[in-house]
Length: 320
Length: 320
Image (spheres, rainbow over the protein chains, first blue to last red):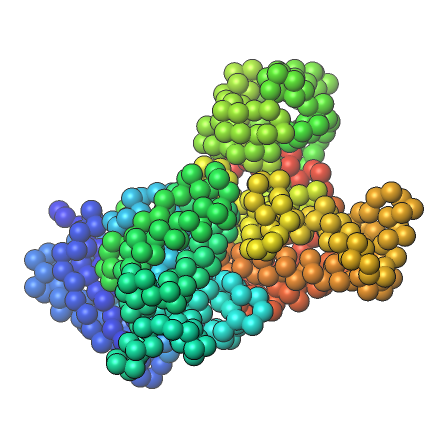
């Protein structure tokens, strides 16, 4: 009798759900909208109902489902599934694990969404099931997950792995959403890159980015990488500055965690080697030689599926 | 029948050894010199013989000894007890675990010495057996150990926890023994503090540190703290600079590992609150509020015994 896991990735606008086999293959995946009204109180009910409906036509019985692994963007007590806070969803001190368990009558495990994606990438993506891995997602913000001794680090009160909020500019850095200034996120996210490029435009430097911005109304990280590929000096500066700071930060993390894989994901990582090459150079400069020997940079492979696959892994890890 | 563990802390000049009870009390401790001749090839024999001799008068039988937990200053494969490299001892690709097992006929577990001290402090010192702990030793150099999910992080090739080699001054920092520049160790060690103070003297600033150095021939970290306590402006500057940089670095680490205890040890930590108070201020400024809530700064309590007690814990952890 084949067994299945349910992975759930709860985001601010939609909830990704999937039935996943024991070997980590997605049998079926679907999405439902995230109802953030009334501080997200309807979400577990919506999830439970949707899972129930999908199970009807899934071709297997509920008895074959081993449990639900869910990720949420917030601070989680992973032992109980208690969500201390998930700002984008509206949850505060919310018993997500218990509520979802009661509604579905299934074992439920909850993790921070970035940590869940790291587990997914390690299981079925580019991580290759290593014991020590660093996952960094460069999107609108910068997220991360750290696997050490084969387990994700969640920390004393669920804030471990918040790599985006490492201070990289101690004085005079740009303000971050977290309330601090000079966080990695203010530099190495798509938003951060655009800010750096706009500063160069505003300083009156000669760059085609100015024209692109005027034509399109906005500037994107992709525009910056494309301009850099076409030898635009200012765009090259931005890419190098980001790679320098990100490379040093990852080297500092690697000196502490000594990972064998460093998985780079998120929209900004679509630049591929154009980002990885200067990133490796900066990393090599700031890492201990032995740390550098162990560490391989790889691009994330699972994209938006990393979360649900990580959710399945979470169940597998707990109940086999 | 009472059971005992043997803790061993192998340093460049002496090897600390101890018989330790199941509850972590030192029954007997002693030291032997480290014979670094012939690349340290005699060390396991010396240890084995010394343990054998001490067992004679120990008042218990060898059958009551559960194993040896040994720390060495180098890069270790903790699964096998293989020492990749321990420069101060002379070992390179050295099968310490196997050799010591063969000589003593006891289970042997090996860890990096700074990691072992972190385990010791967490078991019987100021750590209080938490699941997530950061230990930082501010001595001649800066060492560290990270406990996450209840286990020490050793990493992919034994370099995890090398906190002293985090880059804190990206450009123009002082050279470090590791070959890089601007490492935390160049600022927050006793040596680093003295260097910062000497720079202030050489810059022609008015400070009583100059007189102290002339009188004593050398300057120590203790002199700097004492002068700062007596309101010497330059000494205060040095203490604050060190606390600022160290506090930010620890905050960055805490954002990633989210510890509930941050244990500060080593000679420099003897300054106590004079160091901890500005350190907490800097930490609070750079940490996420929630990371800060979880984290308590404490001074190490075990001093030079941390290693042997950690060694006993290592055995306990493996075989109960």
